[in-house]
Length: 163
Image (cartoon, rainbow, N blue to C red; front, side, top):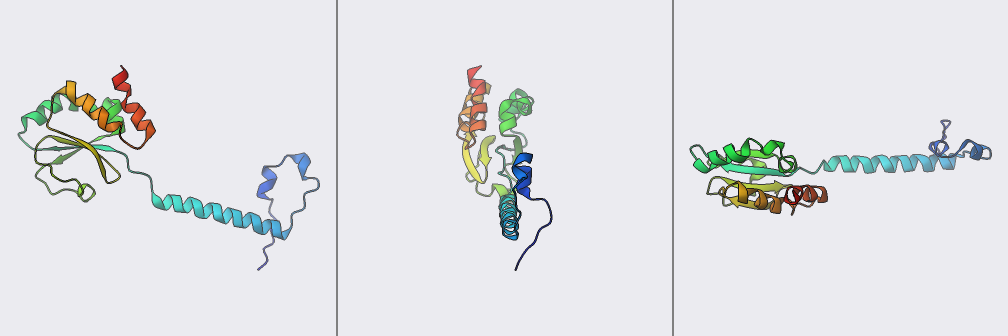
């Protein structure tokens, strides 16, 4: 099958105007350009099919009447969304007694509340069982966040430690 193109070449946009004087656009060149364009489109579609990597999240397993959960809410929960850690791993609350959502099915052995788990792309990166107070919670969380695969996230988690 022969393909003939009368449209301007994609290569013409790359070359300067003085370079176009002896430029001959053959059907073969047009075929090559179309194949390159089709390959680039196929590559873009394959990346789109993979979908974006799911961001990390801090999953808090809690229950009604939990005094340590209430203390965490008063000391950290009110500011957490505004922190660098909250940007890296937004908070997701799950009742410890409810059926686990499908995307958290791999998380096992949660028996105490609160339990905090840093979870990303179906993998647990670490957990904090109980609430040890804010002086211990932040460094423990930063240590877990620094183990995330994204170097940007790991660098951001170390910001608070440097302050």
